Every structure is written in C-alpha cells, then in structure tokens.
Length: 245
Image (cartoon, rainbow, N blue to C red; front, side):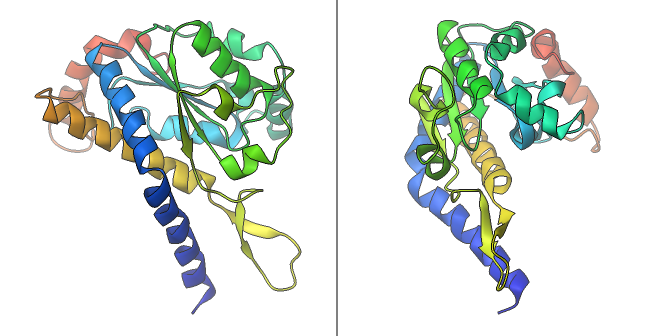
C-alpha cells in the first residue's frame, strides 16, 4: 500500500466513524435547521482560526441552503495574523462584541465550530447565544475537548453548552498520520470531517423540507444558465440578515 493510499484510507476510516456514530445527532441537528427555516430564521455558523473555514464553506454555496449567515470576524482569522488570532480566541468578553454586529433572532440556530471547544470566544459565543434564545449546535472533537482543561472561568467547554453535539471523531491533537522516525503526527482531519458533517446535515434538512411539501431555498451555481437570476430571487428574503453578502 502506498503512503498516499494509506492516508486516504485513514481519512475514509474517520468519515466512516462519523457516519456510524453521529447519525442520530446529525438527524437531530438537521431537524433543528428544518424548524429554523420553516420559522423564517437564519442558521448562523461561527468558528475561530481554521474553524472559520467551515463557516465560509456553507455560506453562499452552490447547492447550499440560502439562509446561512457566516459570522466572519477578521481578527480571529489567520490572514490578519495567526498568532494574534490565537490570543484573541482566548479573550474573555469578545464574543458578545462579535454577536452584537449581527442581526440575531430567537428563531435562529447557531452552529459553533471549535475543535478543542475550550477557549473563551467559542464558549462565550454559546453562552451569549443561549441568552438570546438561539438553539446551539456544537461541532467539536470530543476526544480533544474532554482531555483539555477548560480555560473559561465558567469551567465549561463548548460541548457542555450545546443542544446538539456533533463529534468530528478526530484524535487528540487533530493530526492523524504517523511517519517512521518523526516524533509527531501530520494530516489533520477536522476540516475534512467538519465539512462533510455540515453538508450532511444541510442535505438531511433539505430532504426533510421536501418531505413536508416545502420547497427549500437552495443556491444554484452562478456559473450555470439562470443561476444568478435564481439566486437573486431567493436572496430578496434573506439578504438584510446576511452581513457578508
């Protein structure tokens, strides 16, 4: 077996574990998203560091649900300073400042992505969301989070505050692959499995909406005939609540 084949088979094994162990939680998450869309609410997605990638992955996405609002805070992304983003992620009181920038309703659902689930901003984002009446879905690594000392004064980690927990089934430290003679590991999995989980629950929500006789608001690719016109019609309902359009 080649090294590349072993890598892809290892990734496939993690995805298989997600499918085997997280199905019921994904169904529950999809039901919450279904209820949110029926109520006319938004699905907000928030993450810091590399986790913010998953918010962007589901936002304004061909084949994706229209009422998805990515909460994108540049100070918590890598392109404005990776070391800074790590420090700010641990800053108490910052989550409320971020949430105040967005149009939030108690009919909404928020998905908070954090592999470790231990730092102040994702924990406080969950606390603030609960105060405002939102349903909280956590996408995290339970293996990482359970073994990590909570750093927030509440003693809570993200999974302690969620209505639904989605475990990305990653290993402690995120990286999966061992190489002979190298003391560490390479090949992190959280972004790969996280994207699959999020698209999976959106897919289940769309199926449920169709089963209820409701045509779901889904983006088409702007690169196929009629795509731009289709998307513009759907955005009329939601665009004022999507800050980063």
